Length: 94
Image (cartoon, rainbow, N blue to C red; front, side):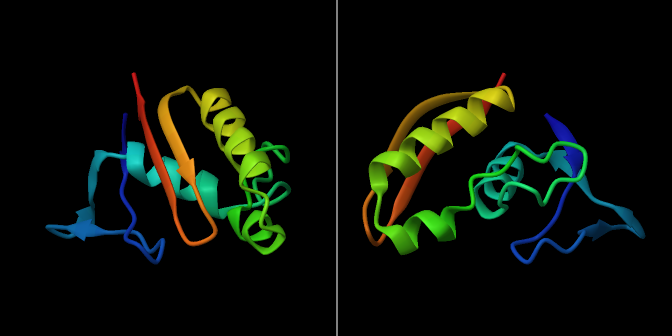
């Protein structure tokens, strides 16, 4: 999936005086993980809100929510592993 790219701070990247574009799959996953429901005006049920789950220490609910959100967004989820200190997601967009 190709889109305008952002950096790790979600600032738009530029290249040669224009918006940088490229494969945005990892970027989309990062945005879904870090945003909470209600933050996407056009779809208020979108977003995992990972910080809230980490505060609750509920890795089973977190894994289920990640699976649901990424699947709804069109990603193919291969693996989700979470612990109190780390979350690993292997997913891609077809």
